[in-house]
Length: 125
Image (cartoon, rainbow, N blue to C red; front, side, top):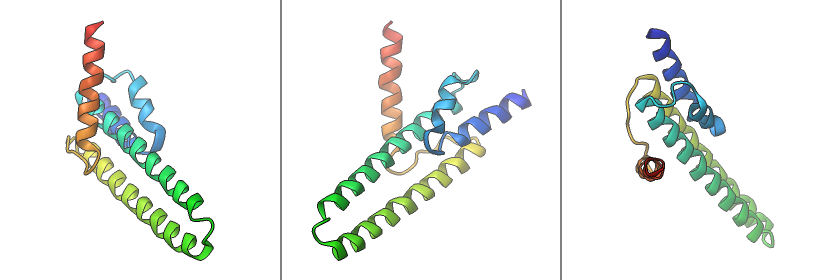
């Protein structure tokens, strides 16, 4: 049982590192409530910040006609997004390691509502 808890803790923690949340969806322990919580939250975190980085890229393209303004705005925007991503990732990993199901700011409630919607679709079949 201790080995299983170690696996769940590890899989939950890596769920917050980029696209590695996918590993939790295919793991043997995928029906564990802690792992499911962190896997969904890690997935929503990844999607949320992927969208933010895409918006940052669009701003970069839109400001290409003012190079100095583009450099300042896009650098500040990229640094801000990156710092927020690192902080939320660290918080998620900390919660996963300590077996706590706590919502991350901005993404936690979206992860729970996504999980409920997807669970509802699977239960109808």
